Image (cartoon, rainbow, N blue to C red; front, side, top):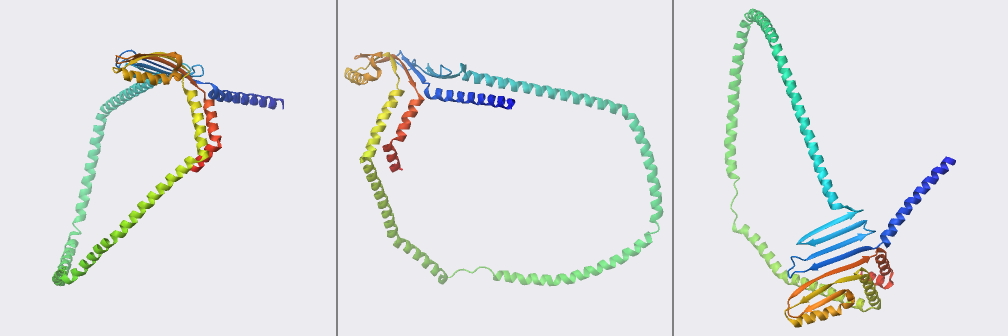
Length: 372
């Protein structure tokens, strides 16, 4: 029992450790913010020398993404536990190429060794054949002498046998010639009635040739075609009426849908849902937008009136960037230069909480049901 209890204790501790790790991972994903940083710089009148950087990090730079634009070139790199994945992927590809090359070299060496072994085996076989050639020649000569003796004996025995059955063969040939003459005469008698049958079939074929159609046969076909044409002409107004009715019904359905959307828009539940969504959307935008903005911008147009209008629009957006950004207008020069740095953070738990509130709102659910 004591052993079983210790095993159960160890299993329970392991399960608790695994559950604790899972809980830590979930909480870190939900509550550890994703931090981002944006940097931009433009010092020349053209866009060729413009530079930009985007950095995104999570959990003390355990996962880090960097995107950089410099000299009309876009470069990116992702770091996992401080290891650059792009470089690691390139190193892995190089290692695979080296491995393939080594395998190819090994195969070539194996093929060379196999070819060398085959050549050595062929040489050994040729040497053996050269040694065995004189013995084989003597054996062949002996076998040839023996075969000649056997053939001579067979020829002598056949000659003695052929003299006796020659008289019998002469008698059989005479009887066969008589039979063949009788069969030839019978075939000639049978071929004559076949020729008469062929002569009879020829006039029958000439009788089966098609005749030309008369006017009385063509008239009913012409009449049926005319009937079809007249029927299609008479049925055209009915078809046109059906198409017009279908168009009217589709237009009426479209108008009914517009009325339904208007009534749905004017309902209190939809208005409340829209108000709720706008509030939550503002909160989400505030949460996502950068919290620190630093930099300076110098801009100007050749037309001073246009620069004044742009300056007024920038002044309206002052609550967004605050005191961190300095704006320098130039009314008599066309220029756009400056540098900007922005920092912000996004918490997944906040986004999920706002989404849950939107989902649980009764007005939003009512409007979604009506739309469906």
